[in-house]
Image (cartoon, rainbow, N blue to C red; front, side, top):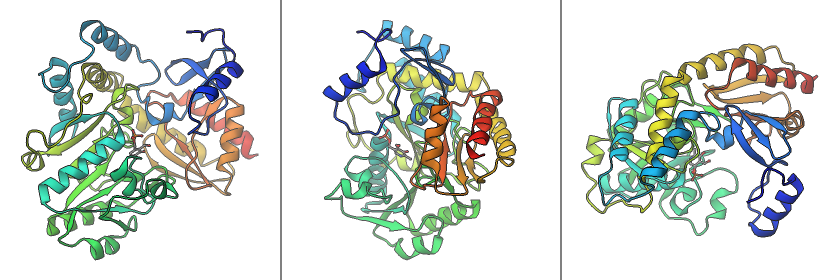
Amino acid sequence: MKTETTSFEEIAAREEEFQLATYKKFPFAPVRGEGSWVETSEGERFLDLYGGHAVCATGHCHPHVVAALREQAGRLLFYSNVVYSDVRAAAAEKLVECAPAEIKKAFFCNSGTEANENAMRMARMKTGRERIITFTGGFHGRTADSISATFLGKYRDIGRPNVPGHLCAEFGSIESIAMLADETVAAVMLEPIQSMAGVRLAPPEFYQDLRRLCDERGILLIFDEVQTGIGRTGSWFFAGSEAAGGVVPDVITLAKALGSGVPVGACLTTEAVASSIKENDLGTTFGGGMLAMAAVVATLEAIEADGMLENASAVEAFLRESLAAVPNVAGVHGRGLLLGIELAEAVAAKVNKALLERRIITGTSSDPRVLRLLPPLCVTTEEAGLFVEALKEICA
Ligand SMILES: Cc1ncc(COP(=O)(O)O)c(C=O)c1O
């Protein structure tokens, strides 16, 4: 395969000819990456504060992850859940150890949407009820049940005809949930920080009230931590954190950062929920495969060994302080390295483009005022400083 010498124009033309055009793309084609940087075939380097779409939390090509994948690929690429596996056992154990104490079991799948589908199924199995409450502004994926649970912009319509039994409450309003949460409801599912909606966070009391309400009414609580999980907010999970008011849900769903770029999703749950799941209730051919499991173990080890949780909080503090002095920045939302930078006007797309011209990759959101940062958790304050300086220039 030609990549090193192929020009961007050639790569783009070829991809457009042979791949469905389902994404609006950045105008460059990275061919290699290291830490917070990616490089194109033409030798241009970009600072990646979008973290490969919130996936590359350990940075691009973390040496420990690459070495673990090489070793595993040479030993055993794949066998499904019909066999026991040393590396699957290690991944499940390590993930459960990183999670709040109430979480005891892991189920592995392949993506975020699949993790959410399985979490909703687990809730229906545990409660014998069918309906699911999710929230305005939440995004949960694009397969049938997950897209039906997504009340953000146009997504739900793309998934028509939707799966029945999905109810929508107002994010942050316990009253709106209380009105819907009757004896037909199996679960309340939420992105504890709504990322695509513009990095929206509720006060800790909201999560505490929600936990209480779910307990009173026999409803399971599911945190979709596809974006917030695996260190993104400066702790392993949003669940159990101070920002969550210490609340631990019944199920946590994960994907994105979990495998450093190797596709893998997971549901983490309590003993009480796990005990109602029987053989053959859930399944997937690829979930829990050896290569993905090696990626999970190495990702968790790399985050731990390099102190990335502490780094996420330190870089967050640096960004909050430096951005306070940038004209036209109206606020910084989120936790750790899931940050929404609210601009004084609805110009996030323009600023995103201007940053890209300076070779800095950021994300936008469904709020036209909010620029999103989801950098690798190993990003340095010096690298974050390059962004602050560029933003100052653009805002001036
Ligand atoms: C919060 C959240 N949940 C679920 C998903 C779906 O994950 P995937 O694209 O891996 O199916 C996403 C993807 O962006 C997400 O951000």
